[in-house]
Length: 132
Image 1 (cartoon, rainbow, N blue to C red):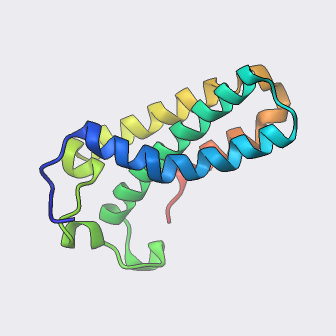
Image 2 (cartoon, helix red, strand yellow; image 1 turned 90 degrees about the vertical axis):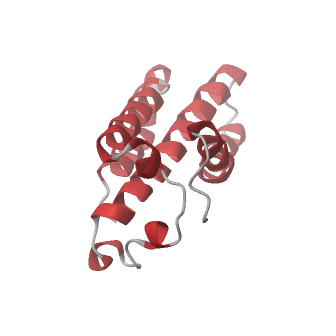
């Protein structure tokens, strides 16, 4: 906060190790318990990292575009705190495009799983379409 002079790489590093890591541990732990192969663990890890980053980008977008009633929390907090966000670095349109690309990349990691991955695919769709 208060330091908007950071690179996209630094912001991405932060969110990969925050939101991405949280989602990755949830997805991969379940896969380990289910006896997934090393290849499947790598695919699920990539899926989770991508949806985690997309989640953060969408969260940053919603902080700018949604109302307090829609969010269920104070809107505009990031801007008021001078927090570095994806929209502050890329703008809204590029942020939306990047989030969608991350979701598409994440869902591509699920191709080998067939219908078993439908819940994970639906989660990815929810992340990009959410309004709060």
